[in-house]
Length: 72
Length: 269
Image 1 (spheres, rainbow over the protein chains, first blue to last red):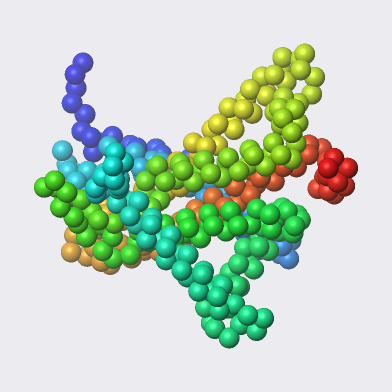
Image 2 (tube, rainbow over the protein chains, first blue to last red):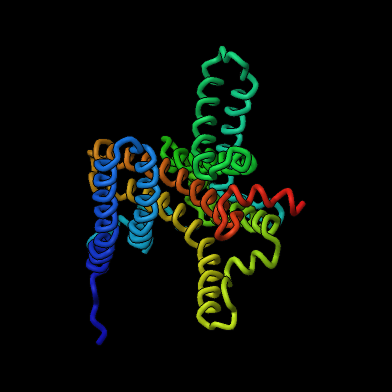
C-alpha cells in the first residue's frame, strides 16, 4: 500500500482538525468571561487579565499547529 | 504538489549562522537579540536618568508609569509588595525584553535584508524569540530562579515534601509526587515552546498570507500584523505572569497563607 497522498491534503487536515480544540477553548473562555463580568462588573480588569492569560495558554496549541503546518 | 510556495517562503526552523566566533556560531537571532537588548537598555537607562520627583521629560513619565503598572500587577499576584519587589527586576526584564524581541520581528527589513554567507543568501536580522534556543534559555533562567528561591525558602526537605505530600507509605501519594515532578520538567518545555511556537508560527503566517494574496499582500497582511502585535503582547505578558505564578507557588508554604509565612520567617532566621 504505497499510495501517494497529496501533502496539501495533510496540511488542510492539520489546520482543520488542529483548530477545533483551540476554537472550543477560546469560546468557553469567552463565555465564562462574559458571564463573570455580567455577575460582578466591578472586577472587570482582574477578570480580563486572567482571561488573556487563559487565551494565551489555549492559543499556544493553535500556534503549534501553525508551526507544524508551515515547517513541514 | 499543489502549494509549493509555503515551504519556500517561510524561513527555516533553525536560526541561520552568520559567522563563527572561535568554535561558536553567531546566528542572526543573536545579532538582532543584541540590538533589541541594547535598545531596550538605552531606552530604560535614559528614562531612569531623566527620572525626578516631578518628571519633566515625557520619556521618564511613560517609563515610570509603565514600571508602576507592572509593579502593581505583580503586587496583586504576589499579594505582598515587598516580595513582589524582590522578584520584580527579573520579571520586568523578561516582559520588556520578550516584548521587544517579539515586536522587532514585525519591523520592515527584518527578513528582507540578506547577507552573503558562503554563497547563500541568509537574512541578516531575525526576531530573537523565533529561535528555540533563546526561548529555552529564558525559560531555563526563570525556572532556575524559581527553584533556587524555593530551596532557599522551604529548604530541601520542604521542597521534596512540596511534591511528595502526605503519608509516603501510600503508593498513591508517591504516584502523585512523580506526576508533579514530571509536570515540573514539562514546564520548561511548555514555557519555551509556547513562546517560540506562537511567534514563529505568526511570522510564517504573515509570509504565507502575503504569498497567497499576491499583489495585494500589503493589504492582506495588515490584519495579520495587528493579530501579531496582540499575540506579542499577550505572550510576553504570559511569560512574565507564568514565571510569577511559579514563584508564588514554589515559595509559599503549603496550607498556610502569606500572613503565616511572614510570621514564621523571622523565627527561622
